[in-house]
Image (cartoon, rainbow, N blue to C red; front, side):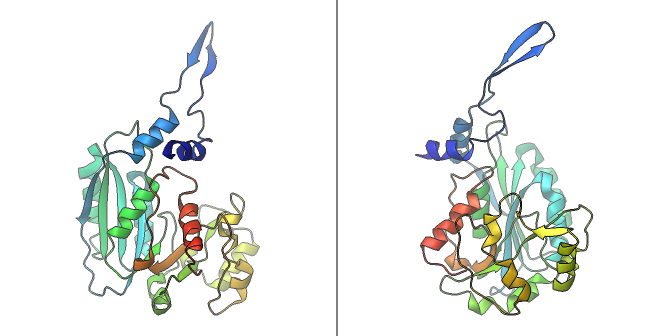
Amino acid sequence: MRKLIASLIFSDVENSNQTYIYSTGDKVKVKMPELDVCYKVQYTVNHDWTIIMHIISDNISHHNQITLVTHADTRRLHKVKSLLQYWKGPMSLAMFVLKNEINTAANELNIMMVKHSNVAVHFVINDDPDRLFYPTNMMRNIAINGSSTEYVFLCDVDFIPVNNADRLLEKYRTLLQSKKLLVIPAFESQISYIDDVALLSKETLRKRIHDIQIRQFHKRACLECHKATDFANWWQSEILYQVRYRYMFEPYVVMNKADVIHFQEYFVGRYYNKVSFFFALEHMHYTF
């Protein structure tokens, strides 16, 4: 069953399991696939991982805070740095690291964390890069398990929360009981040089959307993925409102850690990894 699911997920991986012919002048060569994708997925899922929890430990005094949980590989260390610039609350970060990068990555992160004693870092060692996909949902589970507060903010590393989001979210903690989730509206920039996006007010954000500089996240790539957020209501509302789950919904949420279910780890690489999580929550009668 795992292999069937994997083959469906990765059916669109570019040229990954196709044999094709190409010409080099007067010679014709047959290009064989380097590795069968289904095998690679199965190898990733069943791999015996080396995991180092709390390679950098956090120092949290109040365990009723909200921890931002996220994951990355070493190519996205600059994204971690940007995230730390605006998120001042606790963070639990799972890092995917090549064996020969361990010391370098640890040194870079130690320097980065000098002013951030409330960040915990966990290493997942990639000891076979040619045969392993990025284990997306396993990374999420490690970051969640490595958090030490009562509430978690499930976020991706390339998102920047509004400035002081940790303080703004504090007032909603008591509402996050009995399978209730707080959905965080997500947007994406049309241009690469918006450095002040985390400082925008709701009014200025609306103007940027009107000027086509910012848009609802995944509006073109996957409209259904965030449509249930009900942005039309959000623009007008000053109070919380309940949204109705729609299939393919994959929001960024704050929730009680005790209510977080296990992310299914047979989802590796990209596609459907978060969708499966929220689909399960809907059928377990969680409230968004």
